[in-house]
Amino acid sequence: VFQQTPDAIVVPADSPFKTLQDLIAAAKKAPGAITISGSGTNTGPHLSATTFEKLAGVKMTYIPFSGTATSVAAMLGKQVNAAMTFTTAAIKQGNKVRMLAVALDSRLPSHPDVPTFKELGIDMVSGVYRGVAVPKATPERVRKELSALFAKVNADAGYRKKMAEGGFVIVDVPYEKMGAFMAAKGREYEQAARAVGLLK
Image 1 (cartoon, rainbow, N blue to C red):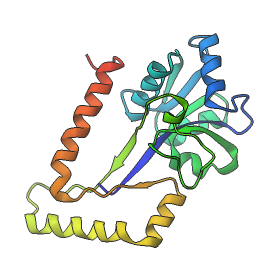
Image 2 (image 1 turned 180 degrees about the horizontal axis):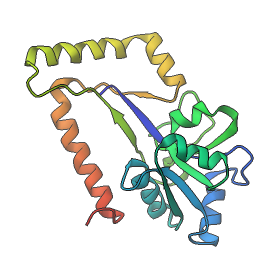
Image 3 (image 1 turned 90 degrees about the horizontal axis):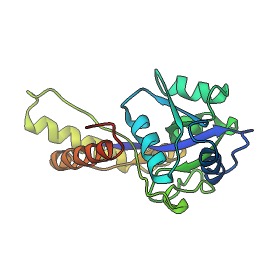
Image 4 (image 1 turned 30 degrees about the horizontal axis):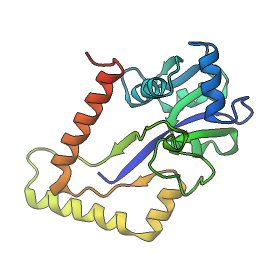
């Protein structure tokens, strides 16, 4: 694993929802009336949107789209009130959007004014992790060499700066620790999916 793209709730720049608390208040006032887009059904964004609803004590209407781009386009076009998307997608839109909260332990360095969900009393840290896979037949030596190469790239100061500016979070999980990392994440996601009713 070499990077993570954290989740964020995003609204159009001219949305009446200036803060996450505004969105929550509107959702509590009219259960199901507030719509939130995301990429796909039973996906990371769907799980995150459902988890947010449960933790915030609100009922929204999740609208699935074919991908991140279409989900964000729907939000920009005001077909939905908000989008559960990624910090990277939000940053690409610049001043056309407002991030209400990010699903990290600490604020994004590129957007220090955007609070975390945790700061707002919602214990949610989520997003998508990215890594590299190789065929099963790949020799152990080659696996370790590739892992070392990615670690070297991740250690580069210029690369780290560019990734941070784009809303990515660098994650250093070497090959030797991938099995444990994947097993832990699998348990975490399964537990979250069961808790919000996406898995029986």
